[in-house]
Amino acid sequence: MDKKHSDNYKQLGLNIAYYRKSKGLSQSRLAEKIDISRTHMSRIETADCAVSLDIIFEICKTLEIAPKQLFDFREI
Image (cartoon, rainbow, N blue to C red; front, side, top):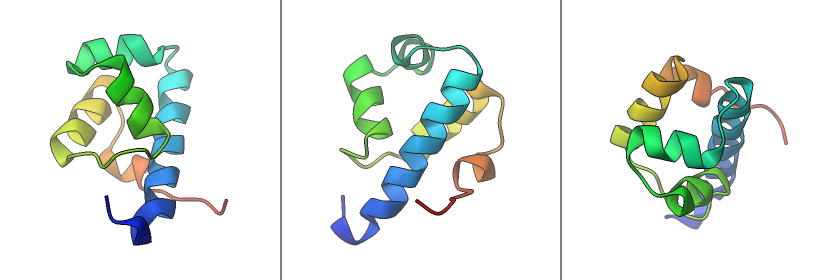
């Protein structure tokens, strides 16, 4: 992951966590639904790793949101 985009990854992770919680899902349950480990899900939400578009699309499908919603970054 390129450090120059770390703020964007943080925002993305925060948005994923927000929408996940709004659907009443734990990290473990969301990870199970999209076929990744809970550890990987945690690392995505905490901006500890890069995330592929394939996983982003699976997250959006599972959370029933448009991808653009995850990229609607607010000031932190």
